[in-house]
Amino acid sequence: MSTRLGTTITKKIMEEQRQFPGAKGDFSGMLYELVVALKVIAYEVNKAGLMNILGQAGTTNVQGEIQQKLDVFANTTIIHKMDHTGYLCGMASEEVEGIIEIADKHPQGGKYVLLFDPLDGSTNIDVNVSIGTIFSIYKKKSNNPKCAMEDFLQPGSNLLAAGYAVYGSSTMFVYSTGLGVHGFTLDPGVGEFILSHPNIKSPPKGRIYSVNEGNRAYWDDRMKKMVGYFTDEDEATGRPYSSRYIGSLVADFHRNLMLGGIFMYPPDRKSPGGKLRLMYEAIPLAFIAEQAGGGAVNANGERILEIQPESLHQRTPLFIGSKEEVEISKRFLAGG
Ligand code: AHM
Ligand code: MG
Image (cartoon, protein in one colour):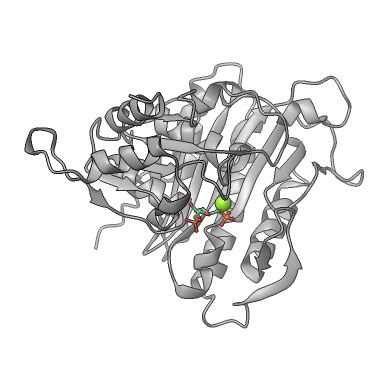
């Protein structure tokens, strides 16, 4: 039996730290802590059917959606794992209305802010379908002793790091600090993430389109034409595309990142501003998509990473994936 474990996430983070000569290790320390929180969530998700943890917690989050018990667990796990580290000046979560400040009893003066969607795809929890956690990290901007809203409302082009965990047939952790995208698979035997997908590059052209077609009646003509394009037959351009839709953004995104294709959550009559959250979902995944050679735009064809956020829980339409399919979506969004 081989005793080789492969490259652990700790080793990879240390290697990346060495590429920033002035780095003191705070950023790396923060990532390690976050990875531990994600392992705790993965463990809990994996035994969800065994514990009396399934079902709704009976509280409603800021978006007015009913929270599942595991949402609450994931949210508090990340907050409690990160709040006493001294690395952060604050956090923001999809499940919490305002900024999560660092309590006075914990070390102050952290240089970074962490934003996260603790459990994305939460309607899939009870039915054993892949779900995940999405995160992003910015450097604190303001001179406030505590963090201020401006520290959070930064465009994605300022991101220091972003990534996600997918709790699926295995648990994967995918992240980027701007030096490419790296994917790790959790070895449950040793409880360590092992580098399984170094330097992920998304295929420049894919074969998959992902959208909730049940919303077709609410779409505008641009959207109907675009999906018509993906489903029409044309051998020269490899159409029709295949349709794949899980209903967990993070899992849909991950599959398309690996196989190539486009994920779309357009504006529609029910949600004219789109459904997904700019800060917790669109920006971090756009950062990963671009680092892997793909792209991400809103319904005006604007690059997601260039949007100046106006509020923590702002929503956005999202078209994200391989370079070619994002260009096709831009063409249709422009009315062509
Ligand atoms: P959430 O589970 O964090 O609230 O995220 C919203 C989810 C996304 O994961 C997914 O892409 C989308 O909502 C699915 O929406 P719909 O059911 O309208 O297709
Ligand atoms: Mg989500």
